Length: 255
Image 1 (cartoon, rainbow, N blue to C red):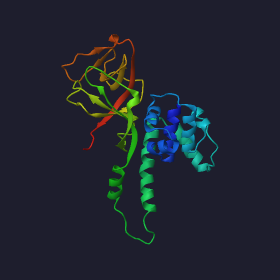
Image 2 (tube, one colour):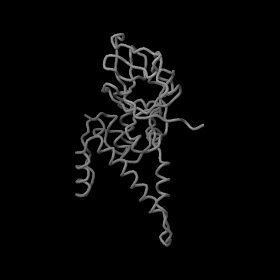
Image 3 (cartoon, helix red, strand yellow):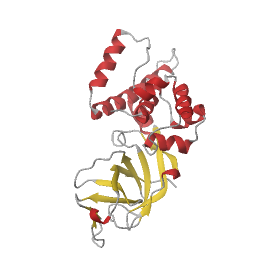
Image 4 (spheres, rainbow, N blue to C red):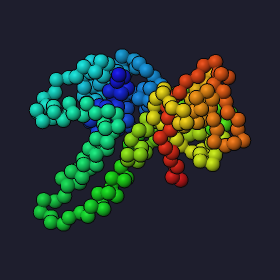
């Protein structure tokens, strides 16, 4: 079932709106908006929800309940929307990626002088598409790849990541600390995370145990480090435990 945050993210994609733009138009601070979109804040204040709906040009009822507005769509557009809604999550992400690529191509075509007969090489479009980025919440307070550090949801900022099939699943990013996941992951690496509370045995994930954040491999009944110098952490050692996401990639900051 889609949440308020899911519908806001969907409207952002449909409108081609960045988080920075939504923040400026709604008057909601970037950090507060990032927490809402990442799922750390489940229910926004009514005033914030109204401001977001106004900035996105949709009804508050749609964002809150999913009940669609009554836009003036053609029969062809309605058919496309119904087909899109019938897709699973993977299918929708593939469509979003292809739509983004085609939008860039069409936009570039529309900007060419009508009298010009010069054809832009296809390589130029490919290079331009590779530079397209999008914004996701970024937690720079370091989640432990070692003994465990406090994960403070209030520290969310924003980071821009390349738009590609590999990054399509990323809902937020965070920086890790420690060496327990070496040699594959090192201190200071930035992880790209798909927000979910479900994880399969063997997957790499972000976990909260008794208020502390961990980046580990899920072992079913324990958290496993890739560095053999670190012993597994039994889940039974936590009074409170939850999964906050699955790792879908990593990136390095340019200096």
